[in-house]
Every structure is written in C-alpha cells, then in structure tokens.
Length: 105
Image 1 (cartoon, rainbow, N blue to C red):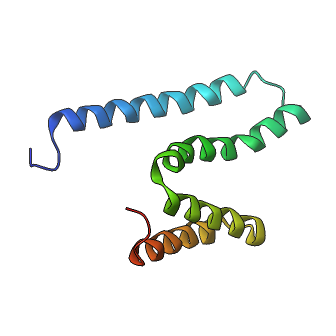
Image 2 (image 1 turned 135 degrees about the vertical axis):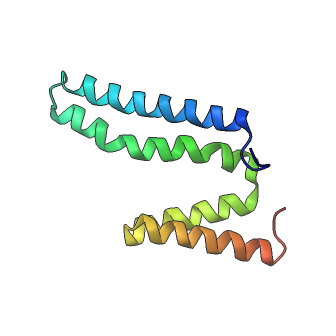
C-alpha cells in the first residue's frame, strides 16, 4: 500500500464503517417497536443538536479563543438565519480571519 493508506488504518476505517452501519441498522430495527408519542418526537428532534454539542465541546475546551469566537459566530448565524450551511461557512471565515490577523495558534 502507499504511504497514505496503511493496512492498519484501512482496517480501522473498515471496522468503524461496519460499526456505524450496524448502529444505524440496529437503531432502525429498535425504533420499529417504539410508539412515537409527542415526548419521543421531542427527544428525537433534540438529538441532532445534542450530537453537535457533544462533537464540538472538546474542540472548544482545547481550541482556545479562536474556536470560541468561531462557534459564537456560528450560533448567532444559526439563530438569526436558521441556516446551518451559512453558519458553518461563517465559522470557517471567522476562524480563518482571526488566525490570519494573528489571534490564536
């Protein structure tokens, strides 16, 4: 294999892919037995936001001021525009501009 795809990395990638597919399939299978009540619907609607928070919190803790500034900008755009794509672009521009101006590491 070449230097970009090592066999151990490829094996880990395939294992993660299998686990992800199995988790999704298992979730769909389990939801067949769940009655969708208003309470369950609210929980399912809140789930994507909690996943975003869980994924971004370690970045905020270790990323410093530039990351906090970029995430604050993304949250503001999300609240104002209700468009996650524009929020991600805004966060990228804010982070790149802040780093270009010498803030952060």
